[in-house]
Image (cartoon, rainbow, N blue to C red; front, side):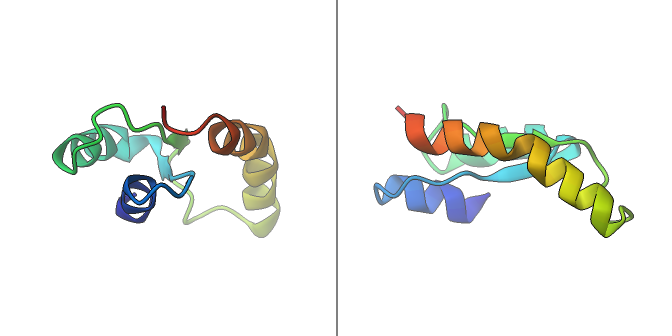
Length: 75
């Protein structure tokens, strides 16, 4: 999350992804680092116990949102 915030502050588009359990934490972090409207993506929690096939499925499902986030920027 912090890497994405710092990249955005430097003018480099990024797409941070956190699990939904950390959405509130991510929002608080963005606000503390001066980007209260920082856009990031969430995936269902947890991910650590998923198989490679399940992780691939989640990655494929979120890819259009990643592309959209990168192309629209953080404005």
